[in-house]
Length: 333
Ligand SMILES: Cc1ncc(C[n+]2csc(CCOP(=O)(O)OP(=O)(O)O)c2C)c(N)n1
Figure 1 (cartoon, rainbow, N blue to C red):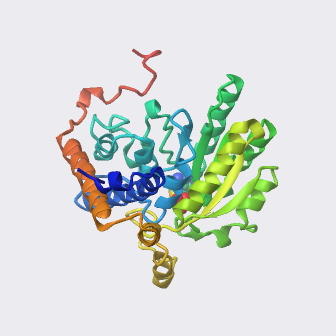
Figure 2: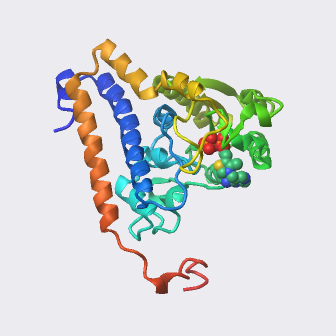
């Protein structure tokens, strides 16, 4: 049984800490397998990996409850996994199989699961922001107390949608937690080559939105900041903005030769690998044993193996279904 040694520790704090590590490892192992499957042409289309950025999703999502809404970008497998979308349905989606969460029609960039309040998987840069603001507006108008967390890359700040969304969310005091994942590059474009003002918190503050930078390689820092911000959002104070400073260890997508950044820079950031950092910290604290780590690794490997088996066994959609879902079933049954 995985994580057997947890019972010996029997402290909720230790369980919580090991849970953070487990979730980061789950994302990492799942995505390493995705890269392999992509090279084997099992996954087609685009594939954007989150490797290196795991602490952000895992930490920030610690501030959310099951009723809160979540909106993400095309680099969203990790967010979906932590949200509770089964790895089986995520991978089947990437395979293009009917059993995928979007019936295999969206692929890697369009993981969507309304039952888990996971509203994408959005391929358009900045495209998730208006969706998040709309969800939050609906919650506010209907008197619900949910928070909508919206994850997006720093590339989105160059979009008009970003400014419209900041403005309306602040003006209407909407319950949105804006989570900017600043990994320094939008495809091959460094932030400093595209923005005259590179202080993203300053941009959010200019809309009267409280904003803080966060060390995105430190899962505890991510969790603490998100909890603090979510508390303010939930209290009805309007939106908050967090700039998670992070780095992607892999290319933008599987097609990117990475000519825009030095290998040395990547190596420097890898020294702050969020999983290794946290693993070392838990070991120093005496929270993590070899047996715990083995339990977590075995559990993650089993989850990934099950997902692969499920996706492989999935069904292709019959050709006669090709035009289904082009229009809503309500108007075109
Ligand atoms: C509106 C729009 N313009 C351009 C693109 C092409 N594109 C895809 S990803 C990307 C970079 C986005 O970078 P960032 O928002 O920082 O996210 P990251 O990939 O770093 O997570 C661009 C320009 C797009 N998908 N949508």
